[in-house]
Image (tube, rainbow, N blue to C red; front, top):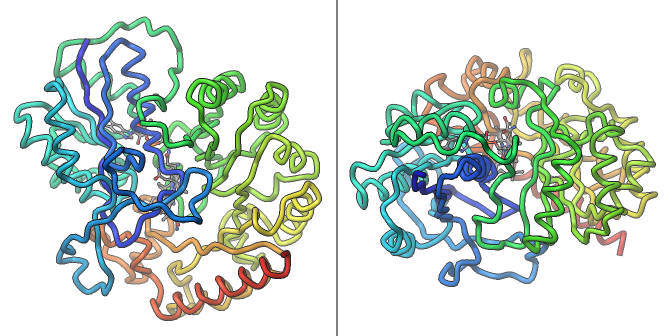
Length: 453
Ligand code: B12
């Protein structure tokens, strides 16, 4: 049995808010390693409920969300032109150091990194571990490691950068460095993510399946899940929800799925039926967005009864021609129908918001920023439907079609430092124009909410 330390590093960014953030990938790897008998400890630099976390509490914190504490740090040179404060979010470094010093020396360390532009937090964590335990092998995985593998190999300081789903690769890596394969006959075929390793945060993230059958030009789901779309079994998902609610006392669950509502009849419907039948008292949230096309009257009622609260609907654009270019996931009629179903089921303006993509690279024949007119029309359309809007600022993601477009339009260099993928930089748009639009969106949302009161 190998002793393994899993590290969820700090976020180093211009802004960060804990909206049901869970290192689900790392916990999935931890669950798989634990299932074969390894001894796993988690160091969670984003633990808001650590007694010394100093995380601010605010009256608007709801459903387990809230602020991290922030310490300003110097901007790397490549970001020096940005007139915003840059900071380390999460536990104070000294506290993390003390936590590490109290631990027994591990046989191996696993570090995750959830966004490509969050690598500085992972690098700091790797450096810290290296300083304390020279010679202990460190592996890095996660979205950054997958999408910027060469960068990570060159700069992270990790002994190994592991790509692809980590459940098997981490197990093989641990075996290769410790000689310990663990107990190969795992009691579970698909072990659950080890949510219990985190101090209770009141919420967990959940996946009912991996990957996505759609091929949106701005999304790396296909690259990150080369095995394709793979829904989990209904029983497995219901067991995990039941464990989280009854065993861990979780009150809020955020779905991280890319395609939660696909084949609803045989997937999400039976899951929700079981939640209702078992009388599980839990609220569900969909921070990653839902496909409005699949929402009908029946599903809306079922979602409401099962406890859905935060409903986010994808609406990249209300321009049906542009929507076609994006794979035609939802048109205006379908969006309107979904909203009517949700409202009839009892969801209110407070619960509903559409994600509208802002700051994408200009299409051919367009000038930079001209897409904002289309975005304005989309926002107006959503507001007319009585739905709030959340701007989803574009982040160019390597490996996607939209990345190639951003590169060919000169918005970003093909070998750009991943820090420049940051959505806060609006790499493909004009800052003032986008910020003005975001103010208009907020005003429109407020007007809608006032009308409802
Ligand atoms: C859920 C999600 C979110 C959630 C929370 C994310 C989080 N955990 O913090 C929310 C909704 C908040 C979110 C927000 C955003 N997101 Co997001 N998100 C996702 C999503 C759909 C799933 C991530 C996930 O948890 N997957 C499930 C786990 C199981 O997978 P995993 O983390 O990859 O882990 C596996 C492997 O990587 C590996 N692994 C992981 N860690 C480790 C460690 C070791 C040591 C090893 C060996 C292996 C390993 O094993 C795991 C299990 O197989 C991904 C897309 C996707 N399909 O991955 C986008 C994605 C990560 N997001 C993306 C984007 C663009 C955004 C936003 C910018 C969107 C926006 N415009 O607002 C914001 C940014 C937020 C911010 N503050 O900057 C991009 C990446 C952008 C980037 N440059 O990195 C992605 C890839 C989607 C895309 N467009 O292609 N997101």
